Image 1 (cartoon, rainbow, N blue to C red):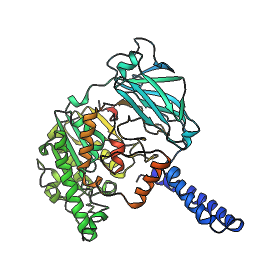
Image 2: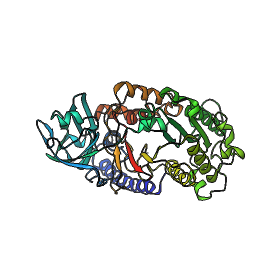
Image 3: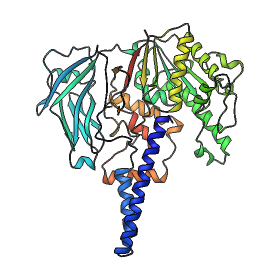
Image 4: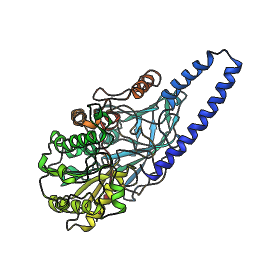
Length: 471
């Protein structure tokens, strides 16, 4: 967890303790002034209300504006929203600008404080739904990618449910090549990161390699239920996730000969970075030699010589992979937006490898599978679009690219996730009960494809990348 997210979580817990203290005082007063049974009833109702409406980890105010800057080269057009649709001036949006984002102020209505505010986008291929924070009252960015033809033809209608949209808006439009047509390398800190972020992209690519950095062996309590001790359960989980990283991409057309598992240990990348020449073994499995998890790799790499899980070896491995596969485009976690420590350091290691490598890629495509501020993003049900994530502190001004996934591709993506062992662990009873309460009182829905939250968050109408040139 990043330092910033730790601070946000600490502040969230502080506020929660204050609320609990105030609730305790109120319960004491209630016990004095009302019948005895009113106290347990109030506790029960308060807990149900918390689970239904206040359990989200939202580390900013819904009234905050999102703050995005874009390069001066991108196209920004004034737009107006009315009962007959979204309108821009005729002939101002060229056909080759396909990634489209509408900057508009959204304000929750009365029911939008208790039910998720929804924006419905009615285009030629049906209705897209993009959800926002309860109580929203600020600038947000709708993803209209794939809706260009309907917009140019004046057929795109946008309206809110449990919220209102300002009549005046700004359309930000981006022109990109189809990066699936270029040699790609996807950097996955853990098995499943490539599928979560870029299954739609890599399954269309003709020249693609997938490099997974870690075994993902920690937090293996589920496997202790098989009668294993903590270390043995971690080793089993690591073996399973290594298999996932090599086998699941075949569902997207990527053979094992184009997949590499480096075998480093989960959540050890930050420590490795701090002492580059020192090896850092697993926190839970007791192992400290990465070679066993690299037996099925299609090529020999520098760390195969000694098996030491060090930062120097990781960077050398990545540099060798760049020179072997010679990708023009690298798909990797966003270094500012995605706070997971392994994700941050995966991209840092990649950037060091680029400096060392004789092969120089042209483009970085950043993705975010986690956020600092909002654990539910993308909000709303599966199959909806991906609106831009919360951005309270400005990010670098990058171009955006948001390719679309049709219904068949979304089904394939969901099935790719269903093959990942880490996404098949049953929900704890507390989370299962919370979902039942939110379904009944807050109108939330989860997909039939899987229970893990990523089946809702990742199987979407769009994939989303921040584009940064290396030249």
